[in-house]
Image 1: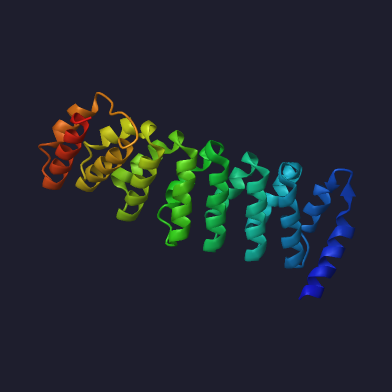
Image 2: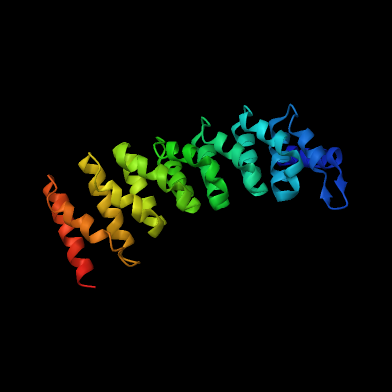
Amino acid sequence: MRATTLLLTLALTAACGETRHGPDPAALAGALDSEDPEARRMAAQALGKLGADAKPVLPALQKKVLDPNVDVRLAVVEALASIGAEGRRGLAAALNDQDPKVREAAARGLASLGPNAAEAIANLVDALGDEDSAVSDAARGALVAIGEPAVDGLLRELVSGTATTRDHATVALAAIGEPALPGLLLALDANAPEARKAALGAIATILEGTEAPPELQPALETCFADTDPQIAEAARRLHARIADK
């Protein structure tokens, strides 16, 4: 195996050549079409090491998100993340991969882009419901990294999502912090008691590190009459905590 890898490395280096700045991205992109999956994987890995210098061959990399070999797809996803914001569409597409390792890598790649991954918010919100917890956790982390632009999508999931996606949305909104407060206050009027309870929990977490906005106390007082006694009690406790500050 090591001998085969060495031969592939030598062949790939000879075929692709180098510019005065390093390996030639165009030649490496050509190697992505090799019949040998190990050669394709190594070409994608080499492009990933070029980082932003691989931008000229981004279309070739994006096509390989659909490569039949999982190791190649994983290397392609990592290369797309290393390119930067321009790789976000390929990463978003990889969130639908059949292999959870690729989906997780795609979510982590989007997280590394921060707000530049905002175009993928809808895909990441969908991934909160992934059957693989490592994928859903990584998607939540990416939405937190995106920050304020992700608040609306997370609030929709908090109000109308499943129990699992609501939990992820609650944690993410709490982590985003103060920018999420206005929407969370509105969510206190949601029809579903689970959504109201989740909103209260996120608000309480946020207020551990920031001042309460003036509109919060009236909103909490409205919750005192909530039909769910747990919500009413939680609202009273939070109201008292704010008043003591």
